[in-house]
Length: 196
Image 1 (cartoon, rainbow, N blue to C red):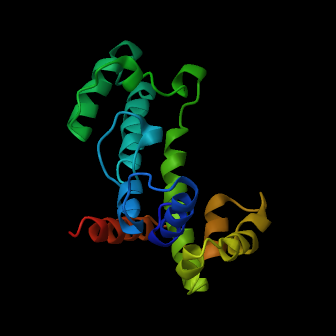
Image 2 (image 1 turned 90 degrees about the vertical axis):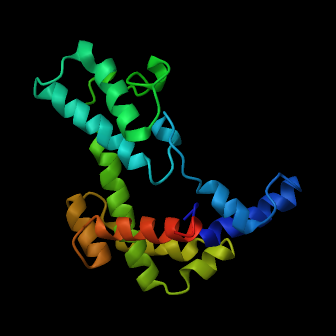
């Protein structure tokens, strides 16, 4: 929602009122700025395109360590090699490499894939919510998120822990969870932004 064209357009107006000229000429430029795609070291600062690639890197290395195919002592070199291959950046310091996350140091293995799973679920929910509320983007453009929060409350949050996550998503969306809505969303959005 926050990085969508409609809501970011509304947000640009609000920011312009509060801050005046903050260096971005118009709502469309602001939308492009908040959705800029570029390689970076830090997962939590990644754009929507690179975020899941960050997760995949961690998952693959984590799996290799758990399976005994990668020794912990070899992790920094394996990380740096894979990162440069995937992102085109040479890791300049350990805090930009395998030491940037606390997960492994506190025993949280198997956690990273849940972030991408959340993105897959979000893609499904976004598709279903837009189908159920046809004027949703117009509401976001007016800064009104009540239809979205109401839909989420009625179709997702009310179930709490009654069902497994896949079941909740299927109940909310009317279809089984799939990566397809996320991939379609990303392709449509970034083809438009970058005129591809």
